[in-house]
Length: 256
Image (tube, rainbow, N blue to C red; front, side):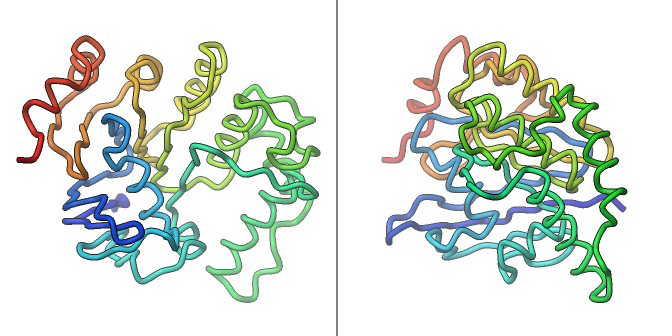
């Protein structure tokens, strides 16, 4: 049975300001969804709420993943269940190498499944990491660098795709992965995502612009405005937004 992420009537506030006002969305393994919308519509708020950021208060609704209420779980538990978030602005962690970070994350998941697990053997981990880096055409030198410390924008995003490849979640939320990337870096990141997409991975791509969707082609496109999903369709909806902008969305759905 495939994993399903179900967002039902989700309301979220930040510092007592209502940001999300009843979001409904279902993402299944094997599906690629794109969530678009103008700045301030609530797209990144949804991503942070899904992963349990403490500044985002859930005031109503449910988030069901694999039949379990994710809102009852902390961020680490959500990750171990198979939910992954790639951040718009990845944080640097000086002193922690990419390899050590990934090995710790893998061992955390293994420990959650079996309290007596001793962790992934180092030779097995090294082979896994090399294989994943090779599949993404990444330099193996990255493994020994401190996570995101001194990385370019493209390197940070590629490091997150490596995390995605190594941790093998069931559903991944990519929050504005194209932010700050030039076209060459964008193509590299998109190619990495496309290599990972398949029956075992559902993806929710959050983006402001259509350009990313020229490289990661979604089956479903949703438009968020004023904290709600107001339009849904296929890839042609993203093309319409590219041609017409968001003004027609504002005119059609602006609250009175």
